[in-house]
Image 1 (cartoon, rainbow, N blue to C red):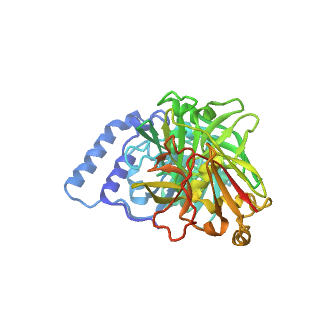
Image 2 (cartoon, rainbow, N blue to C red):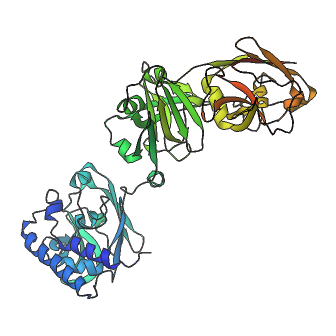
Length: 495
């Protein structure tokens, strides 16, 4: 399982364990000042051997696997080198069953220093503060026996990794001024709870991108977590099907993050782009409203990093009263945030039929993101690309009052195919009163006729916004009386 160390890694290990750690860990280990001179000598010897092309003896013999923030191995040959330095190889006398025994070995903290931080080569820094704050450390023997303790309960100097008992060589074991259950013979592995979780590993390469009026920035989750605006509090969201999700979310305060780049105004547009292409836009005034809590870019839930879906980052509102937002406002898998100042226009679409309701901007945008369809529309020799969602999908809100999109189990389809094929009229009306009617059979599952929200990748121009009816110029099937409808205000199905 453990591979031989390459030459460069070998040299780094020799240097790390040959040095007195004076410059790296003098604040976290026993007195080591006398080691400075011999540490320099050891480094020189290793360098000279390397330059001469001499084979190194490390990476041979027994090994002890080490698992913490990173993984490594302590080899017998490297351990042997530690015997040259007084502070790296010590003696302890203990009593076992009335018999005094003398053990010689390396302080345990020297091995832990190799894995309690991200440093992968010299100089390993022993993190005393981290040890004293407390994490679990497990000592594992060859036969499977293991003993676990919390570091805050045991002094760093309390245990040795010994390879000698009364002057005779033994398999490595832990021994010292600590409970005897921590005296583990035939030691083959040291594990700690410092090891990153699978979720943390998966999210390690993720970066959140910002585009604030054209200015770009990006953050890793670790960088976000280190910001002073990091917060943990309880929040909730409820899906359109009525399922409520609640927990303690951890993340950065969204408004504070954005304000560090630009002063937000009520009519600014903040668009969240997800890893799967989903988009949702908020007006500045919504994010600036903190009466019941703060909007978070959350990447932790109940202390654990979020999985890729619904993470690594999602929007949520948190506060003392556990604010509860609508599900489509809690954008998951956020990859990028785009801010365009003075660019947000709110609207709603009235839909009527066997049920009547007003669909807000967020619901429409969510539909566009989930059921994206882009068509090339041609009118009077003007050709442009429009993006929206198929008109027929909108009928799912009004063709049956019991079953609407996202309001029941996914196995139940909200669109009534039978009713559409039986035939009913659909009236689309503009803000100025202009309207057209089409037959449900002519648009049935026809993805070439769409209600568009974007033109050429941007929001619609004022004379077409907020929504426009368009179709693909190469559509194979179109109603005879189909006309372009701008500034759509309502859609009504008449059965």
